[in-house]
Length: 80
Image 1 (tube, one colour):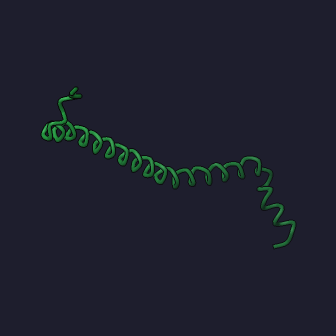
Image 2 (cartoon, helix red, strand yellow; image 1 turned 180 degrees about the horizontal axis):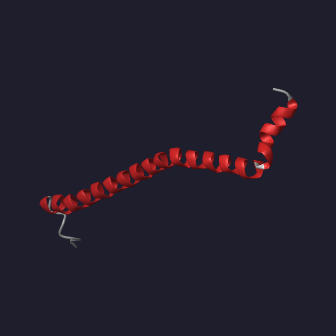
Image 3 (tube, one colour; image 1 turned 180 degrees about the vertical axis):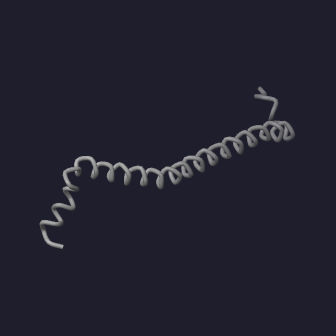
């Protein structure tokens, strides 16, 4: 392939202004289509972890007063 045919290939018969941006948009869309599920998966996992942590905290708070009352400390401050 010589230099003239290479330059004519990149010129695309005068349509390079339309063809190369179309290739660029195509590549960008393919990359977004490939990366979007990975980012979505990370976001969903982060949300699930935070939701589980909130639920664990609620369970801990719900069981804490019961254990304090059983030990006799759940009644508040006692003055001597």
